[in-house]
Image 1 (cartoon, helix red, strand yellow):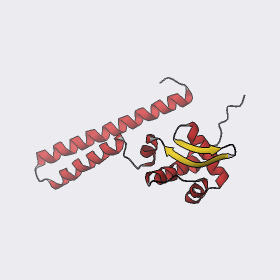
Image 2 (cartoon, rainbow, N blue to C red; image 1 turned 45 degrees about the vertical axis):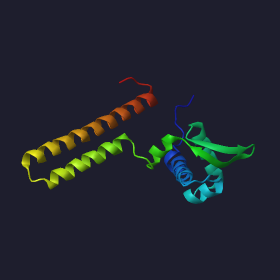
Image 3 (tube, rainbow, N blue to C red; image 1 turned 90 degrees about the vertical axis):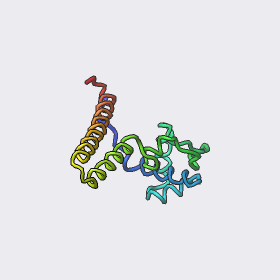
Image 4 (spheres, rainbow, N blue to C red; image 1 turned 180 degrees about the horizontal axis):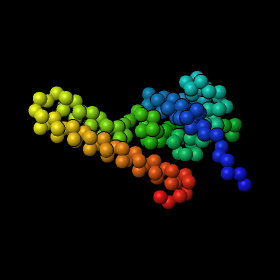
Length: 147
């Protein structure tokens, strides 16, 4: 049994398809294979394979026939977060930290400036800790190693 992993197609195939499909669905469309191929620069057969992979991950719902996928009916709510159409929790926290840094830059009161900068820094630390926790969980899941 080989332990060599397959070539990663997320960044080169699946994510661009998900991004194009989510954008089209959000605009009220039901993107066809040919439209997704044009939007991503991928071949139609490659788009079909990508859509099937995305459907297995429950990120898209596709309309298909015996010959293969025809168009995308819908995308999962998670697709909005993954593609950036909706902010995730880290985006909101980073925005809040940015607002606090801007407020610190605008105030002339040294005590208030210090409090705002410390709060922004604490929020930044939370985002970093959450990111590190997510990465640890992902790596643990992928390698089946308990930290």
